[in-house]
Image 1 (cartoon, rainbow over the protein chains, first blue to last red):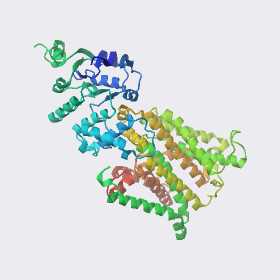
Image 2: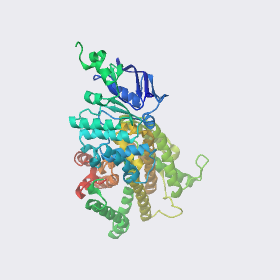
Image 3: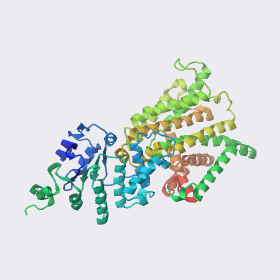
Image 4: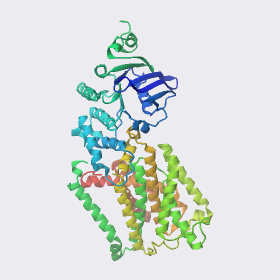
Length: 250
Length: 336
């Protein structure tokens, strides 16, 4: 359990005068569900974007299994087992839910320089895609176009697509955001079922979900990790209470 | 993938029947028009068939891939010039750069046109596709205009005046100078091209291309390096336009820098939008409608664009999906 899968050291990213990521260091251990919490603007999404390679840090290193991955492109990082979901969903809106997942499976299988066979009917894309949708509870919605799905279903589909890439480390950017109470619980159950099989870094504002799921929690404030520990440790930490949980003088 | 779009559904059957009817009409067209005394229509139909290939090739990158290229005439014109230049050398007997003799056999000029346009698209695409959005539109336009001015200044090949091709190319020694034979040759190549497109857009490659149009960001995070797929599509599209241009030079027995001009790029774009962006047959429909309107309206007034312009605006405003979208709605549903 204790070997480190992802090690971030002294990461920094500035936007003009704002330090979105400020000398940030963080370890994610193999197999754990590591939650990242912090107030709005703490730099959580910016961190995820740098981890997946959509943004380049100004300085610092990101290691996966000890290998520096800073210079790799996003697709190269995905090939090495990184995946992310988006807070504001980023789906192929004109396609069906099934086609969205099937495309991720296609990408996983290698290059797509095949010009003749009808990929919409390929069993070795559709069958695994269907299995993933079944696990995500979206089986009955598989052939519905994304534009016609609900917000909650979009969130589930985001997760299903990420899982189709067979990640070793899954970066989840607020998977519960905008969900109702029931949907939120469903999502918590789905993530709980994944725990142990896939290492996860979970950015989330829903504290109930975080405390229910996380093995460890890191607290991010102004681009820096101010504390890391178990749920109990974080809840007891006075710095955290001051900076984030809003119980300044109690 | 909807239920209504199954092979057996009435909608799909109706569309298939329509397609078969159009194909049959295309096959008997030269004989029917001759019998009815409108023989010149065969020549006009040839022009449409050839232009449809170019419009369809633009649609691959513009409609399916979301790459708004405003320089597609570059490949159309260069394909035309390959035929023109080879013919000029065949007549003069001088070898090109002292290396290769000229020829007027389509079996050589067509593949060579495809090859040259493919390589040109690889070069221009490799640079242009580093940009996106408005920058991409401007850089493709700039490259095409550079090539336009290059050929304007090439006095050896006619400069502004262009090159005449006195006699159409042969095809493996077969005489295709006759209008009917050339029509069938063009139609055959167009059917091959559209058949290839029909397979391509639903292949693994095609699905990636459609995905890129909808969200490049999504494609990257499922592990797809979008650049190489965009470049491959750009090369295929360039070759399609080259094929069309090579045929057009044979058809018109003439090639000039006009084929390379940005107005030509714009016309191809209008055909794609008019017919239906991102649909298989939309560009063909667009070619039929635009060229027909052009020749009918031009008979009334030389300012025919004044009528075409508002028509185009109406189509864009009220017929989403162009004329192809309208036909789909009339036959029942969208099944593409």
